[in-house]
Image (cartoon, rainbow, N blue to C red):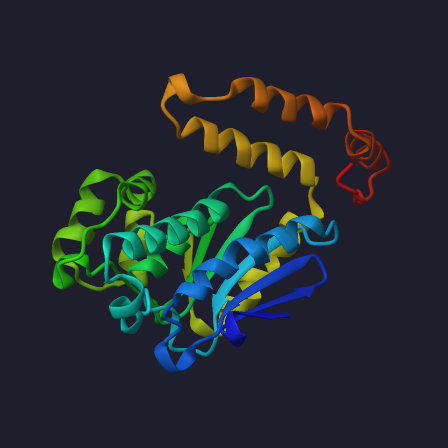
Length: 264
C-alpha cells in the first residue's frame, strides 16, 4: 500500500511491517505529507495481529532519510501558523513512533540527517550499515531544534555527545554512532538486511504482551518520576501473567519445544 502520492510504502511480510520512505531522488527527504502518513501506517500495523515488528527504512542505497524536504519550507513554513502546523505534524509523527505498542527498528543505510535522526531516535532499535552517515545540521542552517527532539537524542547518547552533534553539525560515521550509543549495531552494508530480519524474527517469535509491556515500562522510566504512570505499567505486567501466552510459554518450556505465542 502506498501513501503520500507514493512517497511512503507500507508492506507486510509475515510478522514484519515495513515502512519505506520512498523519495530516493531527494535521498528520501521527508515531505509534509510523508510526516502525515507515518501515524496512519502505524495504525494499520497495530490493528493487524499478524504484524509483530515494524521496520523503517529508506528506498535505495543512498539514504535512510536525508532530513526534511527543505524545498517545501517556502510554502509549508512561511508564517507562524504554517510553522506551527508543520511542527505539530512532525512531532505527532515521531511521538507516534516512540509510543506505538509494537517494537520498531530503524534500518539505516547511507545518509541519516536532521529529521532522519529524529525518526531513527524515535524507534526502539537502530541498526546501520557501515556506509551510514549521521548528522543534525541545524546550526549550519540557522534552524531552531525543538525540545522533544533534543530530549530524545540526549536520552540516547547523553548530554555531551548530544551537544557535539548539534554544536558541530558535522557528519558522524557508523562507527562513531555506535561508540556514542546512537545505534545498537553497525555491520557491512551487504549484511544489514539479513541482520534486521534475524532480529525482527527473533522478536516476533517472543510473547507480544511481554514485549509491549517492556516497551511501556522503559518509556515510563524515561519520564520524570512524578509523571510516570506506574499503574498502567503494572496493569500491563498483570496482563502478561493472566494471558494464554503465559500458559503456552510454561508448557512449551516443560515440553522442550518452541512456544507459539498468540498475543492473548
